[in-house]
Image (cartoon, rainbow, N blue to C red; front, side, top):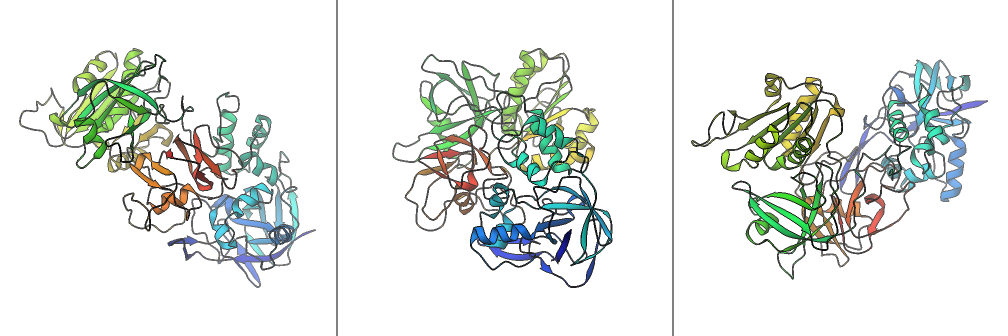
Length: 586
C-alpha cells in the first residue's frame, strides 16, 4: 500500500542567485499534523511563478522515496531531507513508471487526479545545488508528477494512498514525460496522450503541435517545445551578393537590391522573412552583423532590404554613405517565422516607420497572386518625408480587388496633402481599427517599435482578437523570458564587464553586438546575460528548448548534450559554447 510519508509546504521567498534575485516557492519543509488540500493549493503552501507552476492542474507535486534513494546513490550525497525536490507529498510507492495520467487516488479526506509530469525548471537546480538536476530528472525517467484536486480534504503524514480510478489510456508518467522531452514522438503515442481527458492544457497543447506535424518530412527539432522558427536556412554562414541597385525610399530609408555573383539562384524567401548582412566598414575592425527584413516580392534572383539611417547608427550610416552599386556584401540565407500564412480570410498589415518592410513583402506576395482576400494596409509615419514606399504601396493595392488603406502622419508638414499623401493626422490605435470597420476575425501582422507592438498586441487581445491571429515582428532583440527572476531596469546590450575575452568572436546579430568569448563562461547563455542581451530560458540544462536560437554562422559544442536536438539551423544556448567565430539571432 502506498503511503504519504511527509507533507511539505512553503511560501515563496526571494533568494540571491548569480547576481540576481529569484522569487521561488521551491523550498518546502515538512509540517506536523494535518493540512487542508484545496483546489489550488495546500494550506500554507504557495508558488512564486504561477506561469510555470501551480494552478488547478498543478496543485500538488508528488515525489517518491525510491527516487530519493536513487539520487542519493547516483549523486553520492547523503544530505537530502523531505521536500528537497520541491514536492508537497513525499510518498512511499507511486513510481513514475507505474502511475498513469488520469489515475485517481484517495489520500486522507482528499481525492486527487494525476495530470502531468513535473515541469522542468532551473529552480530545482538552485535548491539542490546541482544545475544539471532538471535534465537529470528527465533523462533518468524520474520527474515526479502533479495532482489536481477532485475533492478537497485534510491530509497528513502517514495517510494511506488508495487508488480509486485508473487513467483511460494507461500511459505512465515516465512515458508521458519521455514523449514530450525525448526524441521520437511516435504519432500513435501522441494520439493516445491526446485521448486522456485529465492531461493538463499545456501538455495537451504541446502534444497537439507534435501530432499535427508528425507527418511533415521537414520537421526537425521539437515543435512541441520550441515555437515555429520557419524552414531551415537554405545555406549556412554567409554568401557574397552584389549590390545591383541602390535607391532612396525616403529622407531616412535606403534600399539595396542584392543579386548572386556565381550564377546560382537564391533561395526564395517566405514573405516576411529577414536576412543577416555582414558589413565591413573598416578592414581592421570587427564586422557589423545586422538583420534586415526583405521588403520586396519573394524572388530567387534578387533580395531587397530597406535600411533606416538612425542617429549614430554605424551600419545605417555605412550603407547610406559608403556602399555603392557593384559592392559585394556577405549575406545570410532568409530566415524567420514572421511569415504570411496561407488562407482565404482577411489580412491586416499594420506597421509604423521602418516596420513597413516585412509587411510590404507580404503585400507584394498578395498582389503577385492577385489575392481575393480582404487586405488592409494600415501604416503610421511622422510625415511625408519619412513615409517610404508610398507610391509602391498604392500600385500594389490597386492590383488587389479587396485592398484598402489608411495612412496616419503623427506630425504632418505644411506640404503634406490630406486625402492624397495621408488620410488623417495622429497616431494609430485600436479605436481607429474599430472606426474603419477592420474585421475582428482577420489575421493581424504587426511590425514597428516595441511600444507600438506592445500597445497593439494588448489592445487587439482586449478587443477580442484571438491570440493565434496576432503575429508580430520586432527589430532588434526580442523580449526576455527569465521565469522567477525579479525584474530590474533593462540595460542596452554591452560588452561584459572585466577584461576582454580571448576566445572566438560571438556576434549577437539582433542586438548589434560582437564580443569575444571568455573562459569564465559556461555557455552562450551566460555570455549573453553578462552582456544584458535579452534571452529566453527555463531549465538551463538542455531540456525545455525555451532558449532555442537561430544559428546564423559558425558551429557549437554541447555540454551537456541536449536530450532532443534543436531544429536544423538552431542552437540551445543554455548548454553550448562556440567552436569558432559565431553569430546567433539574439
